[in-house]
Length: 147
Image 1: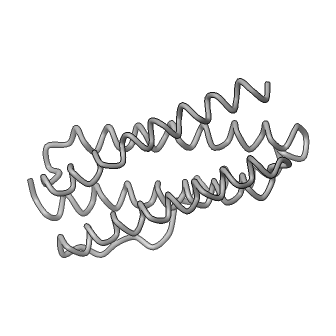
Image 2 (image 1 turned 30 degrees about the horizontal axis):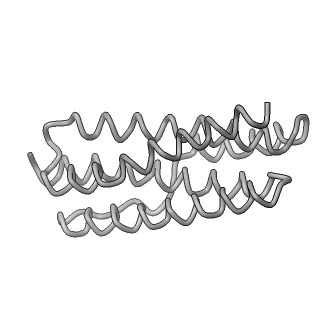
């Protein structure tokens, strides 16, 4: 377990959390129903809080936290807008966040399997895993309800 390896792992998670926050914001923007807009907005706020906690953990380890998401996620948000233009906006928003959440859950699992992650960083990520799983189940439910 090294501090540098942990900061690299956490920065990878941080970028994905930032992407997730932006994805939820975009989903709230394109969704038609107020209930979905509110759900997506609450999830964006949750990802923002997670990002802040991961950012603080990186600083505590002596690292420099990332301050932006990935280019790939920016392209995905553009696709979300195009997709919403050709199909039901609610359905497009739900599909997009489902894809993003699956990616985020896999990143967390990979990070937690890495032996270079410090114990404190493992604890931090494990504390958020339950929330990610619950969000995934909610999104699956929303997908079923709108299809």
